[in-house]
Image 1 (cartoon, rainbow, N blue to C red):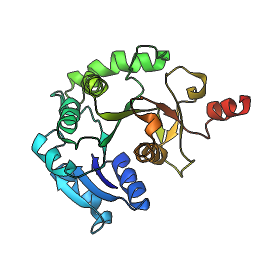
Image 2: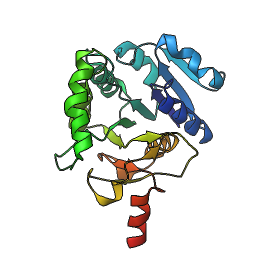
Image 3: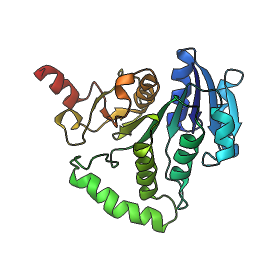
Image 4: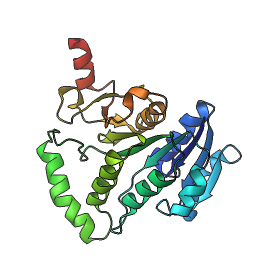
Length: 228
């Protein structure tokens, strides 16, 4: 399988690169030119295309001939960076390619998610402050995901809980709606978030799903497994 990883130089992206190489995939990584050095440990094993991930020409070159595209949707700045990235991938990925996008729990597909007061406060207060500081725009990520949901591509949108570093705890478990009991612990190892993204490429059951994930070793996931 030939896979393009859009946003390969970030923490999540680097973990995805390693997981993809572990599966013997051919990997093309896209990242901003100033971040290329972060991928030096993969030199000679992957192809790196430098450029802005919301640049259609960059994405068109990167995804050519790819069977799958893994996309880190980053709401950087206030100029639609995530939306531009998602649209470029939707426009230029080969027909039939598996597209897997990452975002946070604040994204909802059907409006049936139930959020904690902490997450509501973060989005309601932190979102406008981030936009005011011209640092990030959470609404940009919402618009990007809405475009993915509306597309007829073979997409999956993986919604991540709070993240922590540490050794892998295995493939995370998932549910369709934030607020489901299995997700209550709200914690996932970043390396395992990346593992779920890469594994989704070959899991057709996740096509047109927006799984919200949590560590399979978290208390809520273990409690759910015990009840089953």
